[in-house]
Each structure stands twice: as C-alpha cells, then as structure tokens.
Length: 239
Image (cartoon, rainbow, N blue to C red; front, side, top):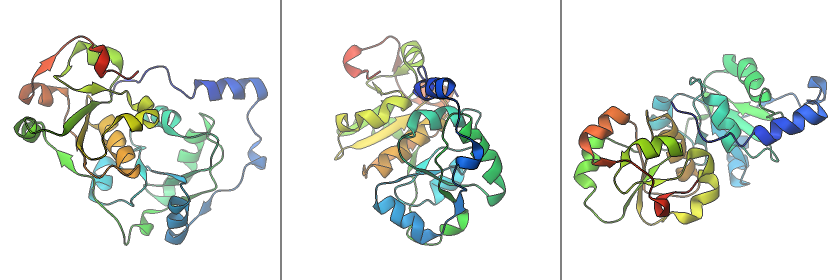
C-alpha cells in the first residue's frame, strides 16, 4: 500500500534522537490483561489497537478498538501516525507468540509506554463486525443522498486518480478531522488496496460513527465500477 504524507511520528523520533531512548529496564513489563481490563480501558477512553489481520477484524472485534494489521509492511508507519504518544498504548495481539516481535516494532518508532496486551481469547462476547461494501454495490447505491466517500490515500495518489466526489483525508490526518464528517450520514472509506481503508473505517467506528463501511477492493476494481477523475479539488481536500 502507498505511504502517507511525511509521518507524524518523525517529531517523536527527533525527540528520541536528541534525548536518547529510554533504557529497556526502566520500561514497564507489559502484562497479559483480561477482558475486564480491556473493557475498563475503553470505558476510560484509552487507546487499544487490534493488530489481527483484516479478515479477522471484519468478522469479530471489540467496539472501540482500532485495527492496524501487523501483517503489513506499513504497520509501524500507520501506528506512528495514529497513536497518541502521550498516553498508554494497549494492543490486541494476533497471537501471544507475537508479543516480543510486536513490542520491538513499536519501540522502533518510540512507542514505549505499553502497559499490556490482550490475546484473541478476550473476543468471547460483546463484539461487532465491520461492514464491507464492494465497488459494484457502491456504484449501485451512490446516487442515494447521504453517502460520503472518504479517500484516505496520499494527496499524490488522489491527484492521479480518484472517485468522483470523494473527499481526501489522508489516513494520518483522519483523527484530527472527525468533526468535519457527518455522523448521521453513511461514510465509505477507500484507498488503493483496502488496508488503509479498513484502518480508517475501524477508527471511525471506534469514534462513534455508526454508518461506516470499508471498500476493501483495490484501485483496479473501483476504477472499473465507479466514475473517476484526476486533479485536486481543494474544497474536498484535507491534508
């Protein structure tokens, strides 16, 4: 998948380069927490990232969690974009066996404050699905009022080709622009392959948007079924 605009975590890395990284033995040892703790963290407004793959999250996830699949090469880039470095970070692992590797990856971009993690075993109750839409179905529904397409790719990708009428909000800027979207309308997120689109849809769902769908098909597919154009329409761009 394409890269976002210059990563927001660059500022964090500059700080680390100046002050030096924290000593490993001064960091808290992450604990394997249970479902009650997960629910408490969400109720308190904490940030929990579900790192399982796209299909697993679509089928079943805990409301309030954000999906950033760790099986993608861009995993740490988008974690660095979306995480709030000033607050604790909790992760739901694909498998307990992934703990060490994922913590290493997170620390490589300065995400050091990880009090704990959750295993997929917490997904036993009070879960939900992430709605998915195909390009063909979107083309059928698009004439309806109240559907907003949010393109979460980079500006250069958008300028080259985008769905007619789509708003551009690069994924890394989405958390700061939630107020610009209509919570009462239907929002469809899309990108070049479905990876960023799903992250965006999960973020919106976690933020309380109830009518969110992810277009999990790539450029070739949505270009076939939906009208496209090139260039940048400034009033539809947030970047």
